[in-house]
Image (cartoon, rainbow, N blue to C red; front, side):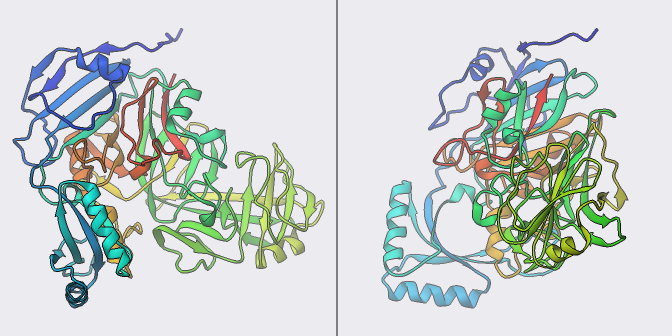
Length: 534
């Protein structure tokens, strides 16, 4: 008989190099209070590779359940050398930077200067500097930097950013707040599973709400998703999502995903692609462009069927296609996305039960709806007539091999990959995190420090889920891609992946949120979370 564990908190030794002072601290939570009363042990082993080696670091841990350990790491301190400033622009060439600098001086902004950004993505084949930053001002208060930004805006400058230099990706003393969940799948009696917000594709919830609804021991935010209606269906997974044997969202082809298998107790990180086809009983075959999303809008791109501007992955960009075939299942919600085109309702046996001349109808609980626009709508009219059968089959390829999808397998989108076979291996260009026409995108996303959510697998099969708070000077400066990979390696990961970060980065432990939201509005509603449940 399996023993059920109900919220035990079993303290183990805290690891500390010294106490560290932080400003703007969040109120103490019950979890933090339990951590703070534990004994402290001095050690210099296994320090995080953030900042210089001599920085002070405090680690405090507790067992949440058999096989589950939570650790909070405070490292470093605010640097007196970091300050607020205004980035006027990130440009590709030194000539562009000098022209802009000259214009600023003509307008009376004499303290502007140019910074060369030499670092490129590891897998970027192009050589030379990534670009040049034109920057102005040095302020201790963010409000003063914002005032300079307003003055520049009044002079007609656009694309301005108020930034904190501790987040540049250059040398700093921090500080950093890192939260770590380690799961020994052999010792953990529960399950590690992805859960959708609202138990459906449509809509969003905070991780706190998702975790509370599922009575989770702990959880982290998961994959990328559609934020607003202009980019598709809010809450739609912008990449692969599979759970309980069901493929819910198609892959951003060629992008990495975290693959969990509760039956085998194994996890994997692989570059995945999906291929989905609809076959009519008359023999006609049509490519299915996507699952459970708005036709015509492909968030993060990486689709099929002539998408523009690209079929390659392109992060934080929405590609378009006027001719798409989309399959909806009941996990999407009650109704399909409305609009021009047509729909056919297919029952549980694959027989066409209803034909609709417009999109936006009910989704049957036991069947599905095929929605077509453009040429896909014409295909439905010709080959999906009442009484005919339509069979939809999907194939998932991971690292060149077909992956089996069963009731125990889950897949969560992310990217880029950070580690492979024990070595740091960041494939940011390959996975669409570098925009050729705008090198500043990769600089802001990959080279600058941001809040991060990371997943990793240790050599012994243990799972690591890690958050690094960011965009909070005096509390935590975040991490860039390279720092994230080094952190995962130092924690023992042999394979690791970057999940959705920024304002989405969240971790819960029992009823507490142990991360600090970086969005001004507070904890961000998200599309899915990875939960530890009994």
